[in-house]
Image 1 (cartoon, rainbow, N blue to C red):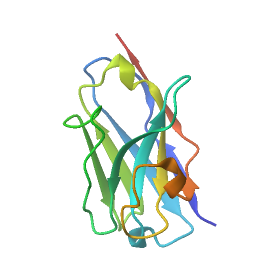
Image 2 (cartoon, one colour):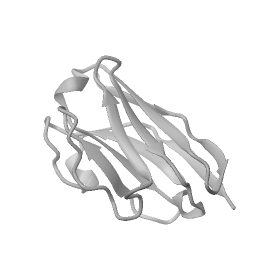
Image 3 (cartoon, rainbow, N blue to C red):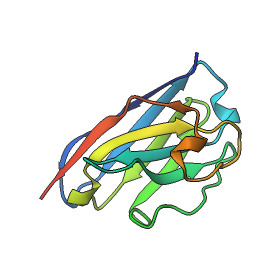
Length: 125
């Protein structure tokens, strides 16, 4: 059974940095592309960034381009999201997701078949 567990969320101030982690178990982590999404209050789930099994990242969402960075450590079965220069509008629940293949399937949440439970990030002004 594939399991994804996010951690690292919390309450920070605008301008701070935070790193999220997503620990994967129950499958061959290195064989699958991964992604980060977020969902704010009364908003749809938003694609942020993705990374293929070989470490290639497609373009980030405009809202986080230049501030966030996705990475993975296949030896540790862990996905990361480094978030810098956080803004109040970054407040959301952050989710990691696994693609059905080693390739980037696209930005729609419907294209990912495994999800973590989410971790809350709150950015205060």
